[in-house]
Image (tube, rainbow, N blue to C red; front, side, top):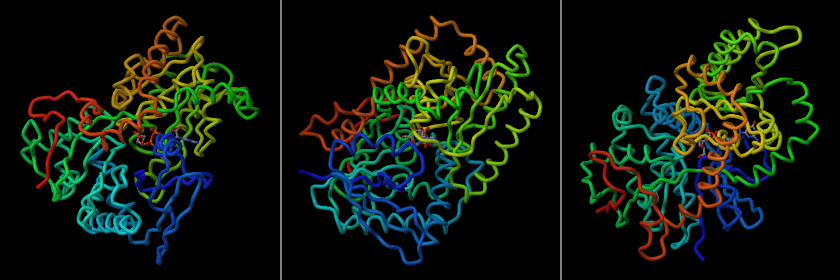
Amino acid sequence: MARIFIISNRVAIPGAGNQPGGLEVVLKATLRKHPCVWLGWSGEVNAKPRTRTVTHRSNSYIVTDLKPEDFDEYYNGFANRVLWPIFHYRLDLAEFSRRDLSGYLRVNEHFADELVKVLKHDDIVWVHDYHLIPLAKALRARGLNNRIGFFLHIPLPPPEILTAMPNHERLIPSLGDYDLVGFQTDGDAANFARYLAKELGAPSHMSLRLGTGDHAMRIGTFPVGIETHPFTRLARQAVKTAFVKQVIESLPGTLIIGVDRLDYSKGITLKLEAYERFLAANPQWYGKITYLQITPKSRSAIKEYSEMESAVGSAAGRINGAYSEASWTPVRYVNRPYSRTTLAGLYAAADVGLVTPMRDGMNLVAKEYVAAQDPENPGVLILSRFAGAADEFRDALLVNPYDPDAVAVAIARAVAMPLGERKARHAELYAALLRNDISKWGDKFLKALNPPEKKDEKALRNFAPGPAVPEPGRATRQ
Ligand code: GDG
């Protein structure tokens, strides 16, 4: 049987104390169902990099170290100072350097070297995320003819933004070396198709020839989800644990929860500003409401992230300075991670889930919040229209995160929403969760990547083609 190779920047080895993040959550079901080999960076930086293999149940984990210059140029540099901001529509934060780009390409070559040592001809390769865009090209250059798929977890901006990235013409077309390129939303897929049409003249039925092999590249939409029922069960249990009970008892009254990695894409300071405006306009809530913001640190070595840490801390301090009483703290800002069980319990206890990223590929926190609610007395989800999840969650209170006044109004509406409306909205949101349960996601992608005969087109969700947008078809490389 063909083995499945998962390739991503970081590898979440079970029990190794990994940092929280969406990738681990979405791959869990695939790793449980199929024997997989997961290859990526160990998280260690070494002048003399080592590669090692760990086995856990039926899966193997191959992890390789990065050299100090690779860590600077590939990870902190091109991936997180160029691709992350630009793909999140933040051209203003991008800092391009040729040195970082060559570090990025070098690490992709290194991953390809490690892979060719272990790949067999019929293995299926599934590459994840923006760190590894040119990996298929590097593998094809080494003569590999395997099925190789790519899934982008973050948004893909329109060509008007993407083409402002220096050397985009070197990088983006290299996606043509994959057999299948998957996106979170139809909008992201359409942006890619528009890029291909504008920059490479791809005609509407994608007869475009890209790359060097004889593979065909197709585009599909595969929105990620969560394990809905297990998360609901976890939340039911979690509210009964001593720690969650203790936290909830210390937060009397109405509870608003936000859970975001410390990242500028998540819009945390604007969210605090919205809450501040809600407080200013609604004195009847003084002493009766708490906003708990859980924000584990991430990428602290990058300047924008350490600056954000102090900006978020001082916004929380400003609100507490202005509104606190001896008996009431309006914002509780926690800068550390919690266990998944604790998170589930806190979601369940919260009356409002406040999820307002300025741009997000999907946003699993929004999905976890909905899964954790008691259907007989559910909380209200306030969701940014710029999160991928907004495509499926039409029954959330959708907001523009750039407009703190509007978000403040949505908070006021959420905390006063009658039970009947809360139940009706929650039922729709829960049904949407089940439609895209993560247990089906990996299989959908893998089936589309490696179709039994020619039934592959059916496994792809169509995206709405706009003008000059090619339909999802085949692009053959010469
Ligand atoms: C990327 C894309 C896309 C957060 N704090 C803690 C913790 N978390 C968990 C959450 C959730 C996950 O991390 C975060 O997922 P998101 O989807 O919200 O965001 P990213 O990490 O930016 O993920 C995103 C995702 O990939 C999947 O494709 O949705 O758009 O940016 O599961 O619960 N987990 C624990 N403690 C914490 O303190 N245990």
